[in-house]
Image (cartoon, rainbow, N blue to C red; front, side, top):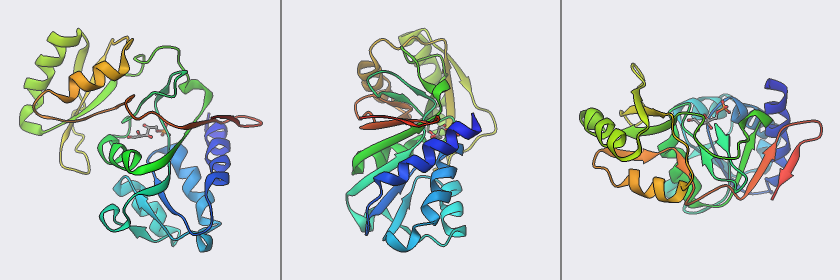
Length: 216
Ligand SMILES: O=C[C@H](O)[C@H](O)[C@H](O)COP(=O)(O)O
């Protein structure tokens, strides 16, 4: 799968145009994108990063990292996913970076999602759904989710997000209405963000392979 991730990450470079500020996601697939971006760093105006991990890699490559508050809307966001359905709706957050990823996806005109073929599913939910929560609300949110969805919340113990919060992973969900579930879970007090990208799905999905498949 590593090779498929590399092929997807490198293909996404074709969406980068001269002078762009590029939104950059998080994860092992995005790492290949960042490495490819480094080869054209003189042609871009900088990057907005979704995590401390990606910021470190961007800076190692000499790519300037800018603040979203300073850049305003972005033309392009490139990020991976843990699952992707046929409508380009996603589960994200396996690396606990979901909140900043969601913010940058929302701020971007075009969201290009880069995945390996194993991430494709017909119905979302095989991958446990990550939820970022305010630490003091962890048990409350877990109880509400159990009651509302029947899914099994599991605390990702020891993990603290870049925003200082906790993560719950919801197992055993079969997500037939991703937009509705995203809306419902977002309303529970203490939820910071939900790793469902359904209201704002990807615009383009690149599936790594020889050759990569571009689904627009
Ligand atoms: O929080 C992490 C992100 O949502 C990642 O984009 C996602 O987990 C996919 O990561 P990877 O490319 O390592 O499979």
